[in-house]
Image 1 (cartoon, rainbow, N blue to C red):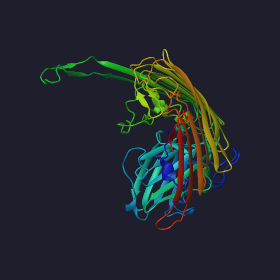
Image 2 (tube, rainbow, N blue to C red):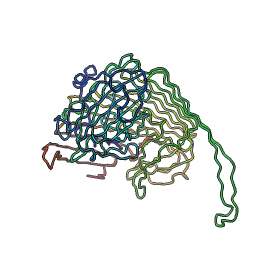
Image 3 (cartoon, one colour):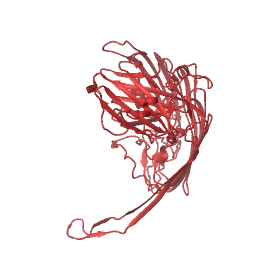
Image 4 (tube, rainbow, N blue to C red):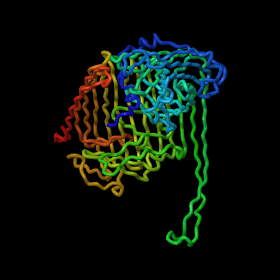
Length: 557
């Protein structure tokens, strides 16, 4: 089972990864203690990276006085001032990061989301203030961006938003300006809003120092809870947003009459064309409707190269297509029973998302022209392309309560002309006793295979069921379970997980690469912080795994 990207969890090792059980009505201490009321301005700022716009003079200023790693809430090594402004369209942050040795600043002109070894500043925003989900915006001294979606203990770097940043380096440090459009965020429909915000500066020198606006309790594993509050935002742009992005293009190809004879003459083929459009409508900040018809994703960043030779299991590629990325965290479950890359070449797709208080509803439908398959197995899996058409439906409901606790339901359906795959399941994440959590998912699947052995003709059986892996129109079903109980704390942490997937378990709209397994995984970790000149942190870690198939044959110990 694939875990979500943990880039900033590695960057912020002092922050634990799970959330404590504050009640839904209680405001965590830091959010009540650290408060800034930004000044509202009546125009857009001119971003230069140097805080030169005179409007910054009216902004309230806060600082990042705490070193939260490697020190534990000790005075920060360098002074960092942060200014906050807003207007009806943008929330602005201005950073002034002092450095007595400006030549040591680490900054590169590089790709988006590739700046996490540089100096950088970090803002995480939780508009619903329920400590469930946060938008993370990161900028290095040159204004190069990184953005992630934090959901519970997971961070997804494939999430990209439209926002603006500029940076400037000087002899005394560097300055950064950030403008975040409200249209890039989901937030409550209220006239006056208070948002939870984490503000950090990362200062990599002889150690990777992390300096924060607020103090951090390492024994409280809720990192979002330990931010402060941006208070009193009002008059935000919440009118209905309507976007239409059409395209039309023409193309022509040609070739030599004889590829081996350069003088054989060049022949042009027929002129072709293609047209399509995307549409987005948001009647309010917590509801959106999107649709695409014959979409063109040619502008999307290409996948990073991965070595596929002699790989045992199907390779995971992150989603980068904008239509599927918006709201992708809502469709994420512990067993990954929805993976949007399985909708490969859509003729058309539509998506609806709405959030009211703790309840979120999301629905996605798509017709795919080239539907791929992942054929899972006990020892490995195969990714198989096809030219078959399919229609996929995904319905998701999620109710959030307390601090990062939730219960959810998901159903998927993938229909071919003579085949189908359906899944239905419940998932949950329950936090209690400050440091403990219990998460899991139960998922039921039913499959009628495509009857086309030319696509996949492997006659290997699924376990001892008598059903083959080849696509020969067989019908089968399966019920899978994943559970995990864990403790996350400053010093002693542990986890115990159990996974059970029968040999006929398939989720064709998801990323399920193995079945016929029963696995128990237990791990213990003890951490301490000597804070010496050589060793800053130390961990003693132990893990044990037992892996059986459904014939009780031990596969791993």
